[in-house]
Length: 437
Image (tube, rainbow, N blue to C red; front, side):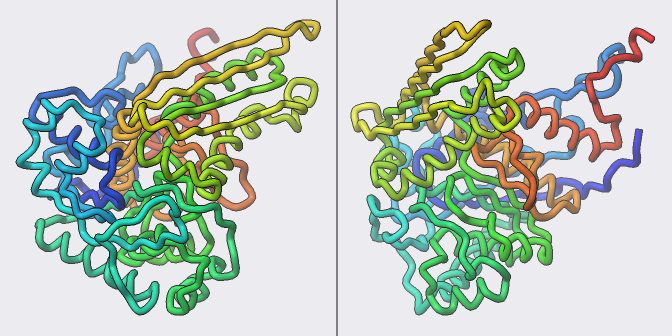
């Protein structure tokens, strides 16, 4: 046992600010409202249903995570956000078509009260979308100041004690780091000069971090994962995590690939294709936005399988990723994977997976968990990159010089050991020799 970390209590109300009130955000909000009223269960949420083993197996201590660390309760959450469309959350949820109309009708009065603030949006970065509910400003710094004013007004109007922000907006075009992203000073200058290297997501990230608010990026965009904003977060005490929620096909990859590697089965090829018909699919129909998503999805296998360590098994892996916009499916996403395996003596085998999933249904509990865990991190005095939350992301943000950990099971061990560390509990290595010596 070590000394517990001092964690401020989760007193008062926590505001969850969501950038983009589309399918993922409205499914998250409606879900929390439904769970509060006993209309549904929080399936898929580690913070609500997960347990954590403490001590030795013989002790039989496996309490719920929410009983071990002080988490904000669902009754204490207040939701707000920004969108390029002015529809309230009820109308937006109806348009998204994820949840059953009968459930939405029961939640209608509460959902209709949540109306989006006007958004920071530039079609250069998301070419397939446009909307009327957009801020105007003389430069990007002016827009950031408007977002900060929105944040402060929302907090005061709703009598909130703490805030977190999650980018749930669309995938922006592919970008790489530039000198504008190198230091906080460069970044401020770039905002003032309307530098094209600063997309909309970075304007929100800057606003949150400047206010000391935890920030998560649920999309694959280059966002808070740049030196300038990481450095600013160290000054203001903002915890950061991202990026790109690990929901459908990549979730399956991070479950299957570690198992194949554990058994040292070779992989000659992995062909992945998706069809989906929601707004995300429409945005990804643009090649520049798809490039951002493709980089996020393809990197997973390289890091899990480590071809540099196992050249005979994975060096020549052919990895193909396709996403096709198919409107009839709406939010029902279908992911097909064909995996060409190599076994003993080089004998070929195949594994085929067809995952018919609901994109926003898989994403909503992650948005909730990330918001609650980021709030816990802030109250625990943690700031900057929170790699222990990599469990939830396709492209986990990590310290320079490290490779990201993609193995879902190692990620979960890292997350739970962080919670044990916060409470001064013994970290679990699974060595288990003490039961036999």
